[in-house]
Image (cartoon, rainbow, N blue to C red; front, side):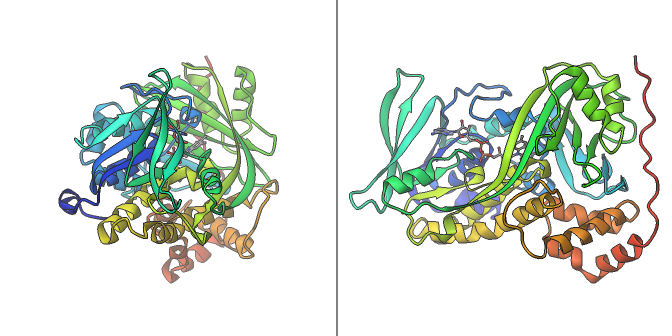
Length: 466
Ligand SMILES: Cc1cc2nc3c(=O)[nH]c(=O)nc-3n(C[C@H](O)[C@H](O)[C@H](O)COP(=O)(O)OP(=O)(O)OC[C@H]3O[C@@H](n4cnc5c(N)ncnc54)[C@H](O)[C@@H]3O)c2cc1C
């Protein structure tokens, strides 16, 4: 990661950069651009308030969002003091081993300290605290209710020279914002491919792996003693025996968020009795038992996620200067693996490094080539896991079933073995590559352990229903 020392002394590469979209990828992109440009404009279509909120442009933020240890590390690098700020605001920092009760592959993973921290808060809270810290930087300006309509170019259409915007809060006033670099962080619905086509460029190839996930989430009051021996619960389905999963994460202001999920039309209902029944049908009873004790504070909110989707910008032969795409706009992953924010953070680190090393000229080709390496790993993890489910459709790498069979053994070993557990969590948290699970030390432990009989699941004792 570029050092903070270097951040402060980086040479300036241009007068102005703009970022389209002020969700998590946009905030991180703006933060790294502030190291290199005199002025950074962060343009957001929605009205943005100085409190935690789910905006129209990011309805997914109403659902469970866990921040992986690698993403948290990067955010803390760019926003020193973030962990303290989050905790002071009521979030929890959890050890991904000790604090997590995780049922997978027919048993519970061992709960032991692994030294990898994740953030336990609502997504709107995390985003708000980061946005507040970002906006203390003197060269960053957030323009909300500002919709980007299309890019502006030079006469040869080889360089993006600005963006045409409409100020929605100001009578839809149109304006051209001139700039040296535009980063599109407008999410999965990004119009970048369409803009490229309109300028005479080819559109990126899209790779999709259909998963048809249905989520439903609800917020509850959290009291001490609701959950004994852990701070959060994850129940991962093991197809074909189970295809339903669930999460219960603590959030700021003494609340829980409980998210249930199913695939291929088997979706959690949004009525009280149906939601509870779906929780009861999960492979382990912990979330159901929790729901019997806690007081609901919100409606049950649904979300549908059709497919892992990646846009292969790196394969384009021509790309305009002064323009890049980052975050979900390049790749959006099945959310159950919690990778989206960390992938965006890793892309922002790469952008920072490239700007420091080589400046803006010819940046796109180097950037897209580098972020392929970043995206390949979470993509391989997400899509590989998704192909355990017969309803998943798309391009399946030939080695997938073999890898999944081995990962099942790793999961089983993690029920007993702290070394296997840590090795697995390092991969899931995007700290080490999946190949690290094939180190002889891990391989040996996994294969040795996998021959042992699995213990029966040991759920939390059922709470008395009131
Ligand atoms: C149900 C669900 C659960 C998830 N859970 C997790 C999780 O547990 N952990 C995790 O790391 N990730 C999770 N993700 C993924 C995560 O939400 C995203 O990866 C992350 O928000 C980064 O997205 P983004 O900033 O690229 O795009 P988005 O969050 O989609 O934001 C795009 C922004 O651009 C704005 N915008 C769009 N068009 C324009 C325009 N023309 N002009 C101006 N502004 C515009 C929008 O209003 C919006 O604010 C989840 C996703 C879903 C769907």
